Image 1 (tube, one colour):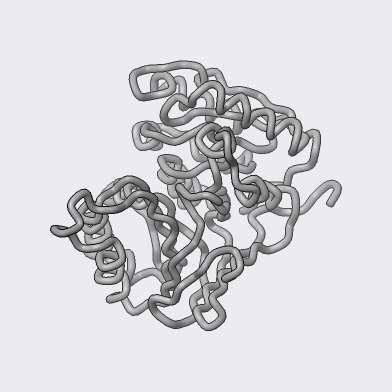
Image 2: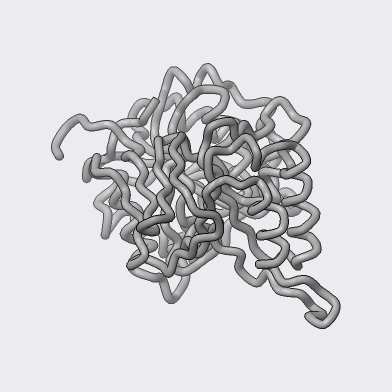
Length: 311
């Protein structure tokens, strides 16, 4: 189930379902939505609230999500930032409300838990894309990160090639299937819950930030033992920003860790994607059908939106 594409003049919502965003970067990102994309912005009630490391209490953040989905004037929902907190609210979401009001839902990092749950509970395609305050609101923003938003206005398929980043083959082959995944830490946190990530026949992508190789080792090993790599049709390794050992002489490298656990599944694997906490950060529609081909180092994904209105 794909949401309708955006048109200039549409109203979009901004929410903070995890941690509170920084004010000045968020204001800059809102100007981007309004002035560069031509959208009208509606701010969620909890965006300015703080409850420890959360943007308001769980009930307040849940209410913002529900209000944005049920407001028929709102055509897309953008998350201001990640941080922590979506795992606390996911079991209380009204997935039937979301299913009955399909619209664009955008974010990444901690938002991974929501992407996984929404797609698996409703079938709605969502978007793993650059955050407003923590990406678009920065003083130096890569144009490709901004350009990622254009996929919401058009119905062309997305083609990720070697020209966009230097993709490397880890395991050769061709794989097809719905694209699923996101932040490694959050994917692991779904295990054993009603929202456990389902990788059967899917292209799984992973990314993370600020995790030493031994921590990445623990997480990918857990996914491996949960059979997530064996069940996937193919694997896409995104950006692992600042995932370096504090004491290199006493550590495996990140590549050694990833290859040891992931390559052993024997599924087609490409690495080097600018997906995640990277600059540029390329948006991926979660749930759309993708094709991974190591022969020409390409990753093609069907558009995440459906047509309607002016093209």
